[in-house]
Image (tube, rainbow, N blue to C red):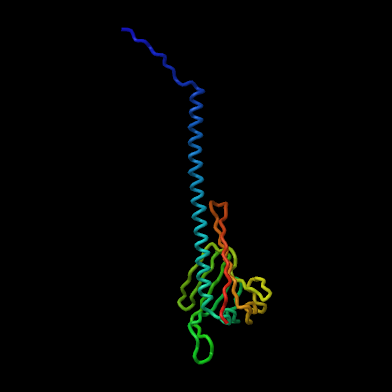
Length: 196
């Protein structure tokens, strides 16, 4: 019996290189897409984190400040500045004619540029909450001419002239670095009317 050999032919080098190049391009494209998706997820996560932290800090500050009175937040004992405010909350009105009755414990907000945090401390209970990724001092005021300036009493220890309009302007700038290169930033500002 005689077997006939069919014409068997293998891949030549050019065909093998072409297939390898095509597979390499496909794999490179897949890895690029996966890497881009992961970077997008990191950026999205960082953006959400910064926005959440800035909004949370703003909510706490605004809610607390709306419950105080201008002579408490701007008094000589509290020395407000663009990095620090301290005040007592109003809990009611004194029927003895002495005006608003204040809660016994101070609430204090302090910005630390070394750690990029704003810390809220209830000085009565010594409980603290830190708001992270804050990159700028947050406390400003609007002057009578309409301009917004950092709180900086002319004479520390004296009643602060910066609260003459009764407004505290809170500007919170959050920022987080992603992948060691790009920064995600988010800014929120609100003007809070302080009671007289």
